[in-house]
Image (tube, rainbow, N blue to C red; front, side, top):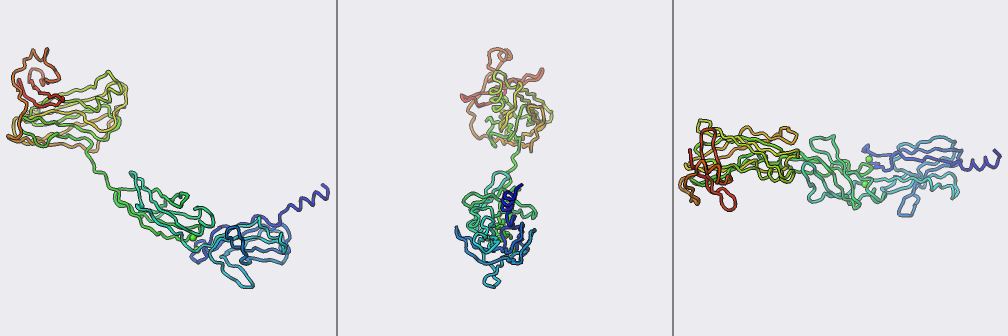
Length: 437
Ligand SMILES: [Ca+2]
Ligand SMILES: [Ca+2]
């Protein structure tokens, strides 16, 4: 290596390097939060003069504010630290405290103009004022169990100095968990949003908006949000088409289900008064449509068995199932609709039991609750528009009579023929017992 090359390389050694602050924003108000910063620098060669000067940054303009540190004792190479700087400088032999503002610390390694090392400039912000902010109206929006707290940070020195919201922190703590924090995100215009979990009932949150120097570190907003509990609907319910019916007037009991996923098959038993005249049972429209969409050509399987309990009560056991390798039905609907009428007045209970639903993997679907219903049949009210008379013979049942209109209710040797009058909409208008009743 010749001498000229050695000289060239030595000139490339920077007199100082790694001038750093451990925090860039301070609030020297003695509250133990960001009250000072520590300054470190590597001195790489003997410096007959070294100072750290502070300039105010106003746009593109740097204005000298004073001297943070000066050494004229020929500083040797090494690693130097200046601890606990709280924003004081020397200016004209006076020790002064800098005001709030955006400053630059610039090292100087000699008294020439070129000795002010502008390329080593570091920013520091002295800030004693909390951000100015507001909450939106409404302050909370919610989707199910996720709430979002909305607001806006209007102004802060940090925003002016940094040109963005990176020096501002919005945090939210739920009142029941003081160590849990949710943090906000900013839009470019300073609007912030914080997602929070919501429980049922009153949710109280404390909102803190602080800057990087921890001004505003106490909550400034208390936000309340009440999440209403959804009324617990019975998942399966016997629902009467009429609460009151006249003697001879038909009414339906629909076995409704709500909010089910992947329903493939179901069974239920409905127990009712043996004085009632039960007509046909309409199959599930929802499951029937689903079957047609998923596997057209196959018909829903339904099975119905009627059991005389002998205590003045009758029980209908009903099974409905989709057919084929198809996914189940999701949504609400009806398992079946049972048609009734009564020739006697009274209050009649319809009680569900043995309710079970299965999904397409033959797993049991849990239900929240099962609800029964009551229908009162009143004397002499309403008028019976449809009169069914005459007699249907056993032969007729097997040949010419339309099965959709005649429902044969019989077990083994007991023959009971129930006839329904169907109106033009396909609605059961009247039910009469024709034989064996
Ligand atoms: Ca402080
Ligand atoms: Ca501030």
